[in-house]
Length: 235
Image (cartoon, rainbow, N blue to C red; front, side):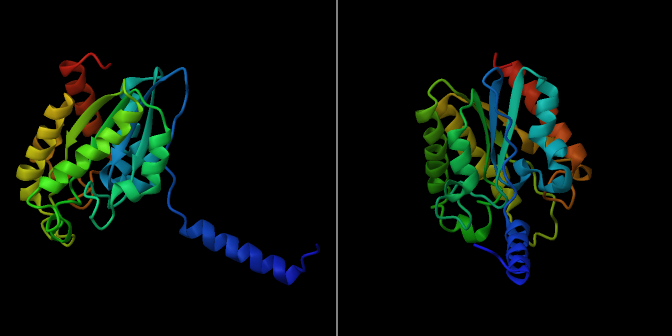
């Protein structure tokens, strides 16, 4: 079938629209010869604070540098994601979730909770009970499929966003959400890394008070590496 020049122009334009509105793909490094690490989370994992260069400036990218060539660290961060299944952007309904579930990993690093603290989401959490239930259920979805995998849980970093236009509740992140994450880690015998304490006195590590910048992401990666190495024999 012949396509006229006019129709070809229209098709190309439509193609450009599709490309321009597409969601950024997860940064996957897959190799059967390397130890696989999958990072699950929201925009902080995604690397929103340096999104133009997230392939090298997100915390998973810096963790890859720390670990070296024997490891392959993949970034499955989803902007705005919640652990709550009834949140405004549930991670379990994202493409990143679907892809990450198909990626066999030796270690899973989880960090969700910042967006759950938003008033519109937390009001559905039953004072945190549903947050804990949904988050633990999410993690178990991976562990049921990859039974030998190990889990590292990150307490979300502090929100230094004084404008609070996103309605993210830093006090909830510091208290109830942190307590829920610790409880889940205890249930699953997972390692815990406290990023809140690491970042609480360092607003200069942030792009706009919410998302860590390049320096912040590097500090986070270095801290994850050092804490997990001390706590476990994972690496």
